Amino acid sequence: MFKDLEFNIFALSLILSGGFAFILAAWIMRKRRQTFNWFSLMLAAAAWWAVAYGFELASTRLDQMMAWIKVEYLGIVSLPSLWLIFCYSFIGRDNRLNNLTFLSLLGYSSITYIVVLTNAGHHLFYESTNIDYSGPFALLNIVPGPYYHLHTVVFYSLVLAGYWALIAHLRHTKPVFRAQNRLLIIGTLIPLTVNIGYIFLDIRPYGHLDLTPFAFLLTSFIIAIGLMRFGLFDISPMARSKVIQNLKDGVAVLDIRARLIDFNPAFEQIVQQDGELFGFKIQELLPLGKVEDPFPELDEKGILDYLVRLKDGRVFEVSTNGLFEKTGIFKGHAVLFKDVTARVENQRALELQTKELMKLNDLKDRLFSVIAHDLRGPLLSLKETMKLVNSNAINEAERNELLKLLTTEVDQSVGLMQNLLDWAQSQQKGEKLELSLFEAQDLIKEAVEPLQASIDKKQQHLLKEIETGISLYADRERLKIVLRNLINNAIKFTPEKGNIKVILKSKGEEAWFAVEDNGLGLTEKQLQKLKSAGELESTFGTSNEKGSGLGLMLVRDYLKQHASSLEIKSQLGFGSTFSFGLVLIPEDTHPSDPDLYKYQ
View 1 (tube, rainbow, N blue to C red):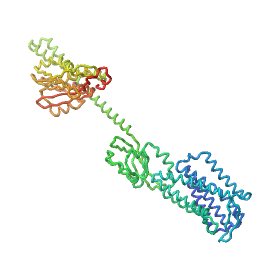
View 2: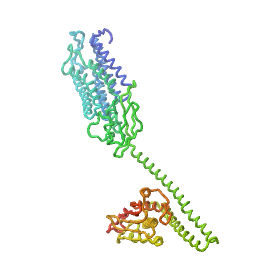
View 3: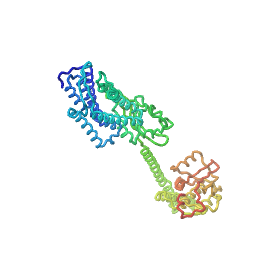
View 4: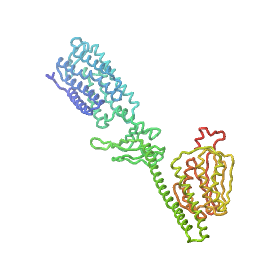
């Protein structure tokens, strides 16, 4: 086969281009990915054809040419099958090629090659062959047989099926991959076009020269440029659709200028931008109107675990990976947006709970201080007074005066103890209310009765402005404590012979309670302290009555449990008004109605 060869420019060009294609196929095969393997096998088959045809063009004898023909067709019969498999693998539809398809393709290639090898016995592929010496070098002249025409139909059917799949996929491909697909289609279309010209249009220099293998030389260079310049097979649409597309986290690919060149659907959901996204920077897609803080500018170092807080409440943890060539040249960023909204909300809730626990701990310390100071003081005073009363160190008049002071301190201690017991009971029961149906006017009567002695002692005037017929469905005992503490405070901070008014009236869909007095009133600083929940401060009334602030804390807690809050209005020197509202029960509602529980 290698004797009497006369190499010409055409033969040498094919052998050299085929060798280059072999090297290129081996280099692509090193990627070790399925799509790359199919392309490298297809390129190797084309290279085999080109090199063998080069030796055919260098041959001078008919038997020598026919021997190289048999070598050539080992590559030719493999090409259309490998092309079809590669196309479906490249677009991610290789699952459509089942075992039957592979067996059919292998059967077609095998039968065709056997027909070529045994042509001398049946002449189904070539009816006749001879050498034409009319050109600058010897060329093989063939007369196609019936199987040759059948092979041509199958060959181009498989090739067109692959092109159809590529072109159909191109319409649904992101712009960043369209250039990739176009380069692949154009590169492989060149030898196909030349081969069509050879077979159907009789475009044959010197009457017999097949330019198809020469076209593979140009295709190899185009693919080589694509590999080195565009990274033709660095990221295939198949890999993208199966990995990035299905990620729940947002993924964005940025070029060296931080412009968006690719993204997945999760990223689109994050930015929620109408229109085209390609070419924009993340800062433009997530401006201050959408995020709380501006998105940082990206450099080669990138960012790690950066929190992006959107105005709609979503929070994303953003990290970037730099994209570098093997030479170390920076090419852009891959940006990952991980939704951490739930984690941030849980962390915020944990922080709030921590702050609440710290407040409760401070409250506990304050309560111990109240017990140690405000309750211990009167008890020690009681002890010393009892010693004086039982001794002969004081006369009758002094004894009577001490007993009056002792009575006052005992009353204050009893009031403090009552509030402490109420608070302790509320802590044991938590926020579970013992609901019952009752008349609001009866609640006021029950709250005032135990305080009547204190009112009489200071000769104060208690006025009642009560609207009858108002029913409530609530925790009666806790509301009684609320009213008792508000009225007791009014007594304490109203001078002797002052006026106190208790008001009950319906106000829209609420029963409105108010306790007014013409006492000392509050400064702005005192008013702010009273409105600040959680603070306890000892105070003294107009007759030096002592208070711990615990009663007002109970009022706020119990009203909060009833979905209400305390409103305070005061003017220094003119008195104060403490009020709150509770939701009224609809007139046609029965106590057993489950809907009543919404008024809790």
